[in-house]
Length: 68
Image (cartoon, rainbow, N blue to C red; front, side, top):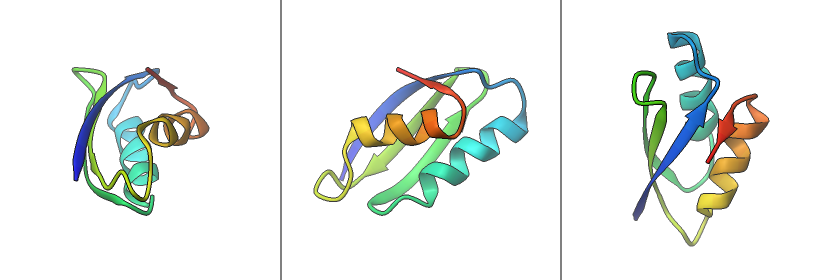
């Protein structure tokens, strides 16, 4: 497993946190997700053989947020 911290822009409430967490958690290869509204980031533990960090960023963007 690898861990990546992705900056997430556009989150303004716990509902946003839930949306990002849900989108990432539903992704194959993702082991755990911790999204912080205060820090504006998502810490994701994932299997790089199944999903890439760039794919995780794309999933966040598809959910309607900015990912860097």
